[in-house]
Image: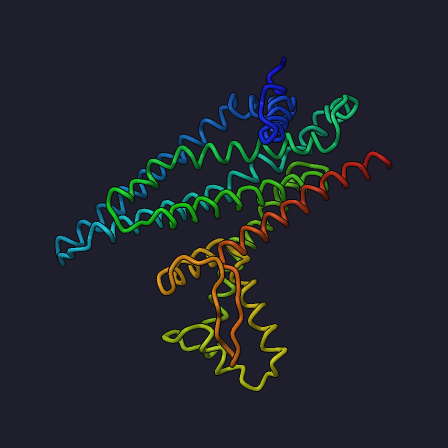
Length: 324
């Protein structure tokens, strides 16, 4: 009796999934190559040093400010500030590292004249793409895991709940999966690594940096009173709209909020403080009430679906290239 037949029926699917991932030669090759590269070790070391410096600077700043104006809740404030700073630094690191180690997945094989050799093996196109994708995602996850002790130090200082910690980890992992899948898609559509890198970094920067900047500029230029609730302000501005257009406006704004990890985390945190942890929130605006998923859940589902589309498109692109 082998190992698989001795398992319960409920565990056989998970066993086959783990076995298929573990036995993927592309994944093993890519992970070994990444971990043996001097570039990977340098990036990981530099990343941890930067996080330690950021946490230390914020700690010294808050402690110095508390010495001038004592605050009984300084530990809670310090915990939240350090947690927020490290999370933003992790997001910035993922923005840089995920395309760096994924955008050359296919183009480097083509430039080294080894991609044709991989394709004549018994591996399917899906196995090749999955191996490349999982390798990039796993290396990025190693970076996140290495920074967990610093990020979880906020628990010792207070001011951080397990739900906030869990939500930030989910957003970072989903963002990693999206960036790696998009970078591999860019690699399948480019002939050279430099072109794939440029495309991956351009789109990633637009989504994760350019979009929040655009929203900030729009808020500054539009007559939205910042001291009021966003939907209350939009209600006063959009009174002439009919109910159908009003519903479309609400759904569009909610998708815009959930289309970026920073805005999704910020709005989810405010809703958590106001109404507690919920899956669905009733947004009352424009004389109507609409149930919407929490922004971080909407972001997770939306970006996982988009990542799957890029994964599927990468497989299709390689198959089309083989027919030419």
